[in-house]
Image 1 (tube, one colour):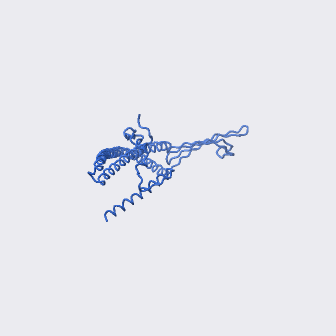
Image 2: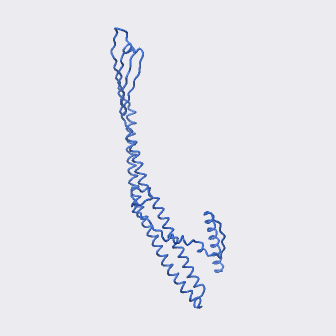
Image 3: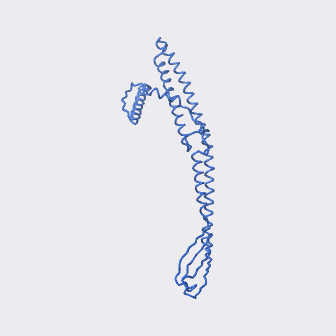
Length: 271
Protein backbone atom coordinates (compact mmCIF):
# COMPACT_ATOMS: atom_id res chain seq x y z
CA UNK A 1 0.00 0.00 0.00
CA UNK A 2 2.88 2.35 0.78
CA UNK A 3 4.38 1.68 -2.66
CA UNK A 4 1.05 2.25 -4.38
CA UNK A 5 0.51 5.47 -2.42
CA UNK A 6 3.99 6.76 -3.31
CA UNK A 7 3.45 5.81 -6.94
CA UNK A 8 0.20 7.74 -6.99
CA UNK A 9 1.92 10.78 -5.43
CA UNK A 10 4.62 10.68 -8.08
CA UNK A 11 2.06 10.45 -10.88
CA UNK A 12 0.09 13.39 -9.42
CA UNK A 13 3.24 15.49 -9.13
CA UNK A 14 4.20 14.68 -12.72
CA UNK A 15 0.79 15.71 -13.99
CA UNK A 16 1.04 19.01 -12.08
CA UNK A 17 4.56 19.56 -13.44
CA UNK A 18 3.46 18.88 -17.02
CA UNK A 19 0.54 21.28 -16.57
CA UNK A 20 2.82 24.04 -15.30
CA UNK A 21 5.32 23.51 -18.11
CA UNK A 22 2.64 23.66 -20.81
CA UNK A 23 1.03 26.79 -19.32
CA UNK A 24 4.43 28.49 -19.05
CA UNK A 25 5.36 27.70 -22.65
CA UNK A 26 1.94 28.84 -23.87
CA UNK A 27 2.37 32.19 -22.12
CA UNK A 28 5.75 32.52 -23.84
CA UNK A 29 4.14 31.86 -27.24
CA UNK A 30 5.33 28.27 -27.71
CA UNK A 31 3.58 24.94 -28.06
CA UNK A 32 5.01 21.93 -26.29
CA UNK A 33 4.05 18.29 -25.86
CA UNK A 34 5.34 16.39 -22.83
CA UNK A 35 5.22 12.85 -21.54
CA UNK A 36 5.78 11.47 -18.03
CA UNK A 37 9.10 9.96 -19.25
CA UNK A 38 10.44 13.38 -20.23
CA UNK A 39 13.76 14.51 -18.71
CA UNK A 40 12.58 17.88 -17.47
CA UNK A 41 16.06 19.21 -16.79
CA UNK A 42 16.70 19.00 -20.53
CA UNK A 43 13.89 21.52 -21.08
CA UNK A 44 15.92 24.23 -19.34
CA UNK A 45 18.07 25.99 -21.98
CA UNK A 46 21.74 25.74 -21.17
CA UNK A 47 22.32 29.42 -21.91
CA UNK A 48 19.88 30.29 -19.12
CA UNK A 49 22.03 28.37 -16.66
CA UNK A 50 25.11 30.25 -17.84
CA UNK A 51 23.34 33.61 -17.69
CA UNK A 52 22.07 32.94 -14.18
CA UNK A 53 25.58 32.16 -12.99
CA UNK A 54 26.65 35.65 -14.08
CA UNK A 55 23.97 37.38 -12.01
CA UNK A 56 25.41 39.46 -9.18
CA UNK A 57 23.38 40.97 -6.31
CA UNK A 58 23.19 44.76 -6.17
CA UNK A 59 24.49 46.62 -3.16
CA UNK A 60 21.60 48.51 -1.60
CA UNK A 61 24.06 50.91 0.07
CA UNK A 62 25.15 52.16 -3.36
CA UNK A 63 21.77 53.85 -3.78
CA UNK A 64 21.33 57.35 -2.40
CA UNK A 65 19.17 57.72 0.68
CA UNK A 66 17.34 60.71 -0.80
CA UNK A 67 16.36 58.55 -3.79
CA UNK A 68 14.45 56.12 -1.57
CA UNK A 69 10.93 56.32 -3.02
CA UNK A 70 9.13 56.94 0.28
CA UNK A 71 11.57 59.69 1.29
CA UNK A 72 11.42 61.35 -2.12
CA UNK A 73 7.61 61.37 -2.07
CA UNK A 74 7.39 62.78 1.48
CA UNK A 75 9.96 65.51 0.77
CA UNK A 76 8.29 66.43 -2.52
CA UNK A 77 4.87 66.75 -0.87
CA UNK A 78 6.32 69.02 1.83
CA UNK A 79 8.09 71.24 -0.70
CA UNK A 80 5.03 71.65 -2.92
CA UNK A 81 2.70 72.32 -0.01
CA UNK A 82 5.18 74.79 1.53
CA UNK A 83 5.17 76.81 -1.68
CA UNK A 84 1.38 76.84 -1.63
CA UNK A 85 1.29 77.94 2.01
CA UNK A 86 3.68 80.81 1.27
CA UNK A 87 1.31 82.16 -1.38
CA UNK A 88 -1.68 81.93 0.97
CA UNK A 89 -1.38 85.25 2.84
CA UNK A 90 -3.86 86.86 5.21
CA UNK A 91 -2.99 90.27 3.79
CA UNK A 92 -4.82 91.52 0.71
CA UNK A 93 -4.51 94.71 -1.32
CA UNK A 94 -6.72 95.81 -4.19
CA UNK A 95 -7.33 98.95 -6.24
CA UNK A 96 -10.10 100.10 -8.56
CA UNK A 97 -11.26 103.04 -10.67
CA UNK A 98 -14.57 104.26 -12.04
CA UNK A 99 -16.71 107.18 -13.27
CA UNK A 100 -19.72 108.54 -11.38
CA UNK A 101 -22.37 110.70 -12.99
CA UNK A 102 -23.73 113.45 -10.77
CA UNK A 103 -21.84 112.41 -7.66
CA UNK A 104 -23.75 113.75 -4.62
CA UNK A 105 -20.50 114.36 -2.74
CA UNK A 106 -19.30 116.94 -5.27
CA UNK A 107 -22.52 117.76 -7.15
CA UNK A 108 -20.69 116.90 -10.36
CA UNK A 109 -19.48 114.03 -12.39
CA UNK A 110 -16.37 112.46 -10.87
CA UNK A 111 -13.55 110.14 -11.72
CA UNK A 112 -13.18 107.79 -8.79
CA UNK A 113 -10.24 105.81 -7.44
CA UNK A 114 -10.51 103.18 -4.69
CA UNK A 115 -7.81 101.48 -2.65
CA UNK A 116 -8.55 98.79 -0.09
CA UNK A 117 -6.35 96.68 2.17
CA UNK A 118 -7.31 93.82 4.44
CA UNK A 119 -5.66 91.65 7.04
CA UNK A 120 -7.59 88.82 8.56
CA UNK A 121 -10.98 90.24 9.48
CA UNK A 122 -9.89 93.90 9.38
CA UNK A 123 -10.40 95.88 6.17
CA UNK A 124 -9.57 99.53 5.42
CA UNK A 125 -10.83 101.26 2.29
CA UNK A 126 -10.08 104.77 0.97
CA UNK A 127 -11.72 106.47 -2.01
CA UNK A 128 -10.96 109.67 -3.92
CA UNK A 129 -13.44 111.38 -6.25
CA UNK A 130 -12.17 114.10 -8.63
CA UNK A 131 -14.81 116.44 -10.15
CA UNK A 132 -14.92 116.64 -13.94
CA UNK A 133 -17.19 118.31 -16.52
CA UNK A 134 -17.71 121.51 -14.50
CA UNK A 135 -19.32 124.54 -16.16
CA UNK A 136 -17.23 127.70 -16.73
CA UNK A 137 -16.58 129.55 -13.49
CA UNK A 138 -17.84 126.74 -11.24
CA UNK A 139 -15.61 124.78 -8.90
CA UNK A 140 -15.82 121.72 -6.68
CA UNK A 141 -13.45 120.09 -4.27
CA UNK A 142 -12.38 116.46 -4.48
CA UNK A 143 -14.14 114.12 -2.10
CA UNK A 144 -12.25 111.71 0.11
CA UNK A 145 -13.95 108.78 1.77
CA UNK A 146 -12.60 106.36 4.36
CA UNK A 147 -14.13 103.16 5.65
CA UNK A 148 -13.04 100.66 8.29
CA UNK A 149 -14.69 97.33 8.88
CA UNK A 150 -14.07 94.47 11.28
CA UNK A 151 -15.30 90.91 10.90
CA UNK A 152 -14.77 88.67 13.98
CA UNK A 153 -15.89 85.63 12.00
CA UNK A 154 -13.19 86.22 9.41
CA UNK A 155 -10.64 86.63 12.19
CA UNK A 156 -11.61 83.25 13.65
CA UNK A 157 -11.61 81.59 10.26
CA UNK A 158 -8.17 83.00 9.45
CA UNK A 159 -6.84 81.80 12.82
CA UNK A 160 -8.22 78.30 12.24
CA UNK A 161 -6.70 78.16 8.75
CA UNK A 162 -3.29 79.10 10.15
CA UNK A 163 -3.53 76.39 12.80
CA UNK A 164 -4.60 73.87 10.17
CA UNK A 165 -1.66 74.84 7.95
CA UNK A 166 0.71 74.49 10.90
CA UNK A 167 -0.66 71.04 11.74
CA UNK A 168 -0.43 69.99 8.09
CA UNK A 169 3.21 71.07 7.90
CA UNK A 170 3.97 69.21 11.14
CA UNK A 171 2.37 66.06 9.73
CA UNK A 172 4.46 66.39 6.57
CA UNK A 173 7.65 66.62 8.64
CA UNK A 174 6.55 63.54 10.60
CA UNK A 175 5.98 61.73 7.28
CA UNK A 176 9.55 62.57 6.25
CA UNK A 177 10.90 61.21 9.53
CA UNK A 178 8.76 58.09 9.14
CA UNK A 179 10.06 57.58 5.59
CA UNK A 180 13.64 57.90 6.85
CA UNK A 181 12.94 55.27 9.49
CA UNK A 182 11.45 53.05 6.78
CA UNK A 183 14.68 53.50 4.81
CA UNK A 184 16.82 52.38 7.76
CA UNK A 185 14.56 49.37 8.27
CA UNK A 186 14.64 48.56 4.56
CA UNK A 187 18.45 48.62 4.50
CA UNK A 188 18.67 46.14 7.37
CA UNK A 189 15.91 43.91 5.97
CA UNK A 190 17.44 43.87 2.48
CA UNK A 191 20.84 42.93 3.87
CA UNK A 192 19.32 40.08 5.87
CA UNK A 193 17.32 38.83 2.88
CA UNK A 194 20.40 38.84 0.66
CA UNK A 195 22.45 37.07 3.32
CA UNK A 196 19.81 34.32 3.49
CA UNK A 197 19.69 33.96 -0.30
CA UNK A 198 23.48 33.71 -0.57
CA UNK A 199 23.63 31.22 2.31
CA UNK A 200 20.99 29.03 0.68
CA UNK A 201 22.83 29.26 -2.63
CA UNK A 202 26.13 28.24 -1.05
CA UNK A 203 24.45 25.40 0.83
CA UNK A 204 22.73 24.15 -2.34
CA UNK A 205 26.03 24.31 -4.25
CA UNK A 206 27.83 22.25 -1.58
CA UNK A 207 25.06 19.65 -1.55
CA UNK A 208 25.02 19.49 -5.33
CA UNK A 209 28.78 18.95 -5.49
CA UNK A 210 28.52 16.22 -2.85
CA UNK A 211 25.63 14.35 -4.45
CA UNK A 212 27.02 14.80 -7.95
CA UNK A 213 30.31 13.19 -6.93
CA UNK A 214 28.43 10.53 -4.98
CA UNK A 215 26.28 9.71 -8.01
CA UNK A 216 29.41 9.42 -10.14
CA UNK A 217 31.02 7.04 -7.62
CA UNK A 218 27.84 5.01 -7.14
CA UNK A 219 27.45 4.56 -10.89
CA UNK A 220 30.61 2.47 -10.99
CA UNK A 221 29.55 0.51 -7.91
CA UNK A 222 26.09 -0.03 -9.38
CA UNK A 223 27.59 -1.36 -12.62
CA UNK A 224 29.69 -3.73 -10.52
CA UNK A 225 26.61 -4.92 -8.64
CA UNK A 226 27.86 -3.62 -5.29
CA UNK A 227 24.85 -1.36 -4.62
CA UNK A 228 21.22 -1.43 -5.65
CA UNK A 229 19.66 0.65 -8.39
CA UNK A 230 17.55 2.56 -5.87
CA UNK A 231 20.68 3.75 -4.04
CA UNK A 232 22.24 4.94 -7.28
CA UNK A 233 19.04 6.63 -8.47
CA UNK A 234 18.60 8.32 -5.07
CA UNK A 235 22.00 10.00 -5.42
CA UNK A 236 21.15 11.10 -8.96
CA UNK A 237 17.81 12.50 -7.81
CA UNK A 238 19.40 14.45 -4.97
CA UNK A 239 22.01 15.93 -7.31
CA UNK A 240 19.32 17.02 -9.76
CA UNK A 241 17.23 18.48 -6.93
CA UNK A 242 20.08 20.65 -5.71
CA UNK A 243 20.92 21.65 -9.29
CA UNK A 244 17.41 23.05 -9.61
CA UNK A 245 17.70 24.69 -6.19
CA UNK A 246 20.86 26.50 -7.31
CA UNK A 247 18.97 27.92 -10.28
CA UNK A 248 16.10 28.94 -8.01
CA UNK A 249 18.56 30.77 -5.78
CA UNK A 250 19.90 32.68 -8.77
CA UNK A 251 16.32 33.63 -9.69
CA UNK A 252 15.87 34.83 -6.10
CA UNK A 253 18.88 37.14 -6.62
CA UNK A 254 17.28 38.55 -9.79
CA UNK A 255 14.04 39.17 -7.90
CA UNK A 256 16.01 40.73 -5.05
CA UNK A 257 17.78 43.08 -7.49
CA UNK A 258 14.47 44.14 -9.03
CA UNK A 259 12.90 44.80 -5.63
CA UNK A 260 15.84 46.93 -4.49
CA UNK A 261 15.91 48.96 -7.71
CA UNK A 262 12.18 49.63 -7.63
CA UNK A 263 12.45 50.84 -4.02
CA UNK A 264 14.39 53.86 -5.29
CA UNK A 265 13.26 56.48 -7.79
CA UNK A 266 16.43 55.97 -9.84
CA UNK A 267 17.59 52.58 -11.05
CA UNK A 268 21.16 53.79 -11.45
CA UNK A 269 23.41 53.11 -8.50
CA UNK A 270 25.89 55.74 -7.36
CA UNK A 271 28.94 55.65 -9.60
